[in-house]
Length: 147
Image (cartoon, rainbow, N blue to C red):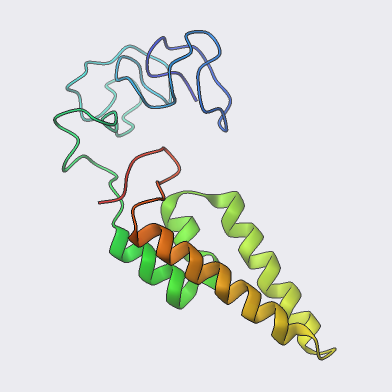
């Protein structure tokens, strides 16, 4: 991943660029995929073809490619949260895998007789996620607010 402000390479899990100090996704000067210079108004990178998301707070943020819906994410959390589908939808692959591992562990513990407690815990975790999503406290993996 590359900084959208200065074009420097940055770690995928970094919140800010260590070279310029700008928050991840806060600018639109460079492609986050290949690092080449882009136009602020461009919808896709002309070098690699990846869709460019507008930075938070920009006037043209509504209707950009890749926006995620609060309704979809919240309903996925409520009904399919144990499979981590809402986290996959939001782009949080690692958190989704944690949810799947927790669900599988609960299934295995059910055979011993103590897994039911784990299912209630994971269910409560998913309801908490859904409430945070509906309240607007969660963002997608790129830091964009949910529509």
